[in-house]
Image 1 (tube, rainbow, N blue to C red):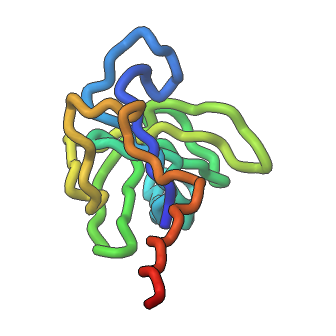
Image 2 (spheres, rainbow, N blue to C red):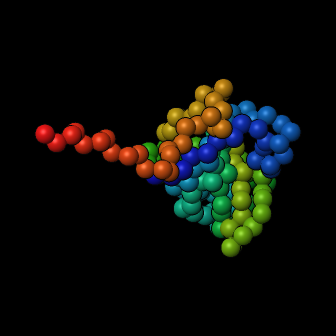
Length: 141
């Protein structure tokens, strides 16, 4: 199971000064990206870095530009949504970080439950690493 992390502040570009419209969840989910306006059109299977109700951050091998129109497909549901490239980030190992925004907010596209607005990740209960001692055996008679 993927580890889920959330953040409420900052933008896709990473500036912490602006409050996000919706909570970001860091999760690797499979996604298909389609471009019909590039020459030639492309389709690429990749995964998300983080998601929110308004879009996601992904890593793409295919070349895209800011304001380019794309389509994201959730392979689990085959749902396809139009979106726009809003941010191009660092390039590593032949892939570029790409911030994607849906044409309209679509929190159900991801099929995950987002934490409530007032949820504080620092208060999250984590499992203890120390083993719990088994109960004592009853005395022998």
